[in-house]
Length: 72
Image 1 (cartoon, rainbow, N blue to C red):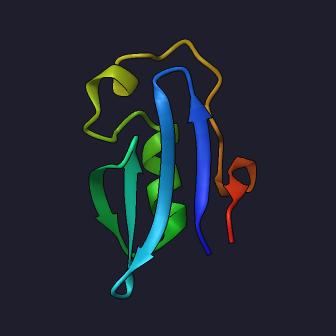
Image 2: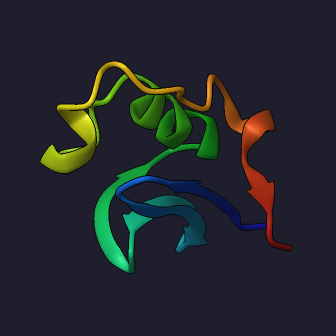
């Protein structure tokens, strides 16, 4: 299963790879996680290491993975 969430700075994706979950924005990998929920939490908390997103604190965020689009 893969997940995506469109934002004003680009599209975040969470995809499985080798037993881990990769968080990316616009096909640029930001981090590797034990679960997709942990990756979604970093997006919500603006802790992605993508400054353009992390510095925006006054926008509507996906509060958890249930708000992400399931790709497959």
